[in-house]
Image (cartoon, one colour):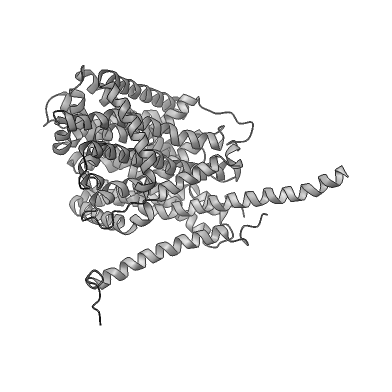
Length: 519
Length: 45
């Protein structure tokens, strides 16, 4: 029996996971406050108990990614030596970025630096100047959102791609475990459990993002119309549903590619506008200084648990929650990156998917967080005030300080919409792949059904305005998956060791014969 | 005889729970390393 045959039937995962996802939604709808409290408490315990295991993990994963990229394995081309890339380099990079945490950086752009400036344990150090606090805040934002975060996504893509393209596996998270540990009795059960957890994690995380994004777009509309009481969030959600359904139902290379290109071009345009009309020299200084501090400080930050500090709020609710959140996104990102990277070498995929998005995030944060910090330290402090009173309005408040604010705010709202739609479309396609008949080509009806589920989960939170419950669910849903993630990582190491041994054996068997031939 | 440190004494049940989870996680990680490095399992076919 082959590894493929042992997998559950195609629709089984679909019908196994749907009730669980709906149950979570139902629980959150019926008991929003209790659910929020239960999940927040659970999240707190998880962060407190496992920080020693999680904090250094992204750095270790980065080292693993780089060692694979610069080894012999890195030269392997996904899909075979003759395979050609399916997407242009620009479209491929746009899709890498927009499918991931693109929507997050738009929202957190000005907030991230500010929050670390105000709440980080580093900012509480005695005798620290405002300038030092700002530098630490920026390098912390770079650490949490930059290279380590993208390394986590990338290693997941490497694992899935390696087993899909070189080991005849399926394009999913269960396949590496099933193939690498096929001699172990538990492998099939663990592979199935990983698959089920993957589907639940992806769907709930995406629904949480959808609900939050609808709230953010609503906040933008309130700012544009100068009417804080207006609530068009349900209509925003409906509009988003129509948009992402339309994009999902067109072929991926038409819908996603066009939307990703448009999104990345619009975000570059907005970035350039702020960069040119704002304090350009200051932005460049911030970028250079923050990159330097990040390179210098990542090792220290990755191992600094603030054990004896009075408050460990920041290390738990920022560093830990982000890293677990990123791990929760890995199945989605891994499958998606592996699928669109056919025709690229492993080295190309690793280096591009780590450093290009991280580099863009560095520039983005240098401009938006950099300006927010400049306003806080040397300006009116209006951006920091907005962050403390109504953080959903922060980026719009920042844009008010620049010329053509009405226009840029509309542009930002469009950017939000396109980023969210791109992410949800990618998510629906990934879920479609995971629950498809052949494990490669997603069936359109299933993509559409996952789209409906996501909106259904998001709707009650958008209607009631209470997204706390689903935010807590979203932040801890990645935790159980983390242990499956470790298992897939072990599967990769195992496969790499096997291949290395095989190559060594091949060399030792060919060497005597070539020696004999020469004699 | 020296008293037990207060931070251990305050909640024995919680300490047992916490220790169990930590030890389970460490054991899991060690097991993963073991199955990766296990030479019998890493035989090339």
